[in-house]
Image (cartoon, rainbow, N blue to C red; front, side):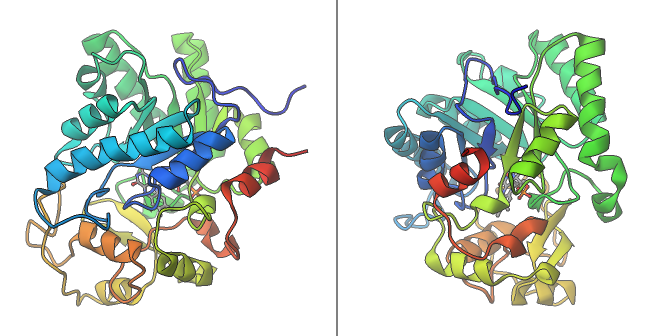
Length: 356
Ligand SMILES: Cc1cc2nc3c(=O)[nH]c(=O)nc-3n(C[C@H](O)[C@H](O)[C@H](O)COP(=O)(O)O)c2cc1C
């Protein structure tokens, strides 16, 4: 039996069933996504804050600049991988979500992967681009049911795949509302993937691929996810310091020094838990004395910093991380971050996972 399944996402067939996870702010930009798409995976550009972390941003027109930057980055990745599969990751929580989705379609994205909220309106925004595959990120069967019901009723269509992300191991914002749920077995891949698969196959009688995310590092992790019923994996942390990665060298040096016990869960200003490194900035935040830089541009629908709570501007803290400012930055990471001991090229990662 062939151990490696084929991943079919809408009309797209990557050579390998691996999606490189979107990593904002600009940790997965056009260089990384282009290299992954060229190597045969799905390369993903995280759209959040792309412009603000680019070296030629002049500080004005935050939203307009980001739309232009999305299109520019998609063209850059496409030049690198003309026949590859290129995705964008767009957070539902963003105030300019619709504009970012439209810009991604205009820029030629093959796939839109969308989480940090349920992407209930996504098919409506993309209706003029039927070839763009739509993939929600979920952490539970409940979320799958809500999306399937709403998309069916309102738009007469189904998702082209689901990224099922486990909060137990993943980096970035986690798909649960309370901190104690992060470690709950209720959200483990062993429980959630078979449950969703059974619902899709037995109840709905449809063939929609499941892509497992969170804690996948090597070939045996990947095979375990396929055994559970996934047709693909999404990996973030392993690509954080890739040679082709878009972040600064200072950022990559910091990540390479990270230890397992530096990883903590915080309540993000978005209102959900996130997995991060305990940088000096996060340390001060956890002790309750953060002095944040000002808000950039009202970029989030629900931002506790803007509502006056004692938190911080997350966009600013992520830009600081991108430039490798250890004192001021917020460094998202998965539980596997301590396994990053050297920089690998994208080709080396693919060889390790899929080579003979
Ligand atoms: C540095 C970093 C930034 C991330 N940013 C985002 C993001 O902007 N949007 C998103 O949906 N997921 C984000 N994620 C989650 C990844 O896309 C991916 O699903 C997850 O990291 C998979 O788990 P792994 O890191 O254990 O492989 C981020 C993860 C990391 C490590």
